[in-house]
Image 1 (cartoon, helix red, strand yellow):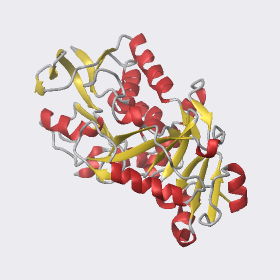
Image 2: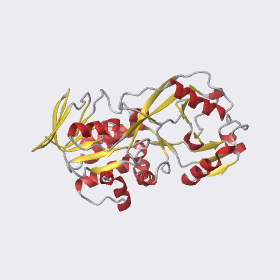
Image 3: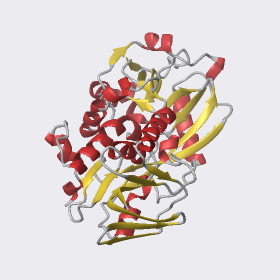
Image 4: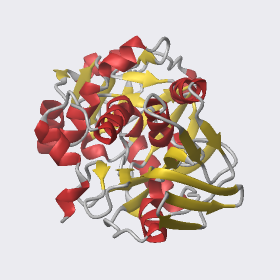
Length: 357
């Protein structure tokens, strides 16, 4: 019997394990053979705290102290948005919301020389964006949890979940596990876990996002280039280990599964990227996809189920799981402990599963 039984070994579940290990015994169950197999292992991994809905931004900003204190987790990247002449409204809204500084096309090309002056009509830049070393962050939380006795068990996909007098019992190929409070941090599978537990599903939607890794355009040293967004997030590109990751930034609803890139969607996204640069894409090094799972209002869900209070939701991270995980996991622990959160009451209410009735 454990105090806290967590389902899901992505960044949400592992960070929660670290926080909850301060309060009692923890067992984390991950379906796959390794942690962070799905969305957490396929993230673009940027900390841009002004990116997302207002509640997401507030949670991201509340995570900053943890990121600053964690050695080598963040490294400078920067962010640039580029737009065509007919994208003024989209561009202006994003520049405002993310507090970016407009720059001339020539200034933008001095930073990213492959930008096409014939198609890029507007640009903006900000330095308040950092790469996240996702493995370092994840393993740091895992070590913290294990140092306090937490069990992290892989290859433990939940097959049945039952609630009894002693709490929750989860059956898996790795055995049966019982916990006083069940934390649902199962990513794209959160509604499936709720169904197995007899809890009303909240209507989460996993959305596929495809990615391609291409060689450094034109042989440039791209290590200091910022992350690039097309206005309206029509595509994005980010330097990664000497290559460039390009995504069509699609959100195509899917059932929970081990996602793979859609060739046509990837080709269309690469074409949108190519329209804004002078170097064509001639070769793919690799491609993949992940599922970004959103709640109906696209805001994270953190809190006790309003009907079954020993079932706790930690779900709907969307594309913001890494940049919000320090504050999200701390909030989960604070709510479970019944103590003050340090966050605004408005934010706590915005994340509460009770908002869905």
